[in-house]
Amino acid sequence: MEVFHWEDDGRACAYSPCEAMLYALVHDHQQYARYLLNRYSIQALEMPSRSFCCCQASTTPHLNIAVRYNRVNILKMIMDSARVFSETERQSYLNRHGCVHIDGGKTALQLTCDLVRPECLILLLGHGASPYVTDRSGDTPLDCLLNQICQSDFDMRRKHVCLGYLILFMPELRFRMKSQLQTNALQWKTLLGEQAFQWLSGTAPPSLFVQAMQKLTQSIPPEQLDSLPDFLKPPDFRLHQLQKMA
Image (cartoon, rainbow, N blue to C red; front, side):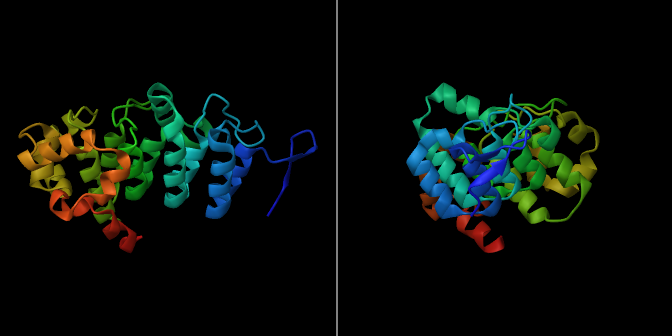
């Protein structure tokens, strides 16, 4: 495992905890990531030097890299460590926009929808990431996902799983593309299914079951989301099914 990295001025420098955490994420070194978080806590999630990230305004490179490389287990560790944040700090951390050059300034949640990462999505939503934060184009995470759905039918199963998760965490369906759904109703009914189309287009409210699930997801601790009994979960809400698909 590497211990030093080269700075732009040619100096060999030891990895700081946050830089070592990036290394662990890229190479999926789960034991190393666990050690760093146990030893340094949120210091391992601080902003690395400019050699590692040119956008110093972004404070969430670890979240975005975890999503980009689909490091679900390490993302769980990060979410556990982030519990030491105050509510305001945690919201700021989860909803901060990423690097403009690499991620287009998207939040981790928006990147999750762009890349269709259901397990990352439920982790971020369950720990308080906002589904209403917009990017520079005014797109919410739901807009990002709908763009993916209409661009290709590849991996549609996982796209629909992501859609189900977003609906569960969006009691108010505020998103930019709603007018497009209403204008091109036939196309979107085919892509989304009749029921999801009605909910998203505003022609019918979500079912009582979905409304109850929305209340449930807002009221239970994040660590209990995956331990709900099956009778309280719609099929796409059972995380162990996704692990078999990965």
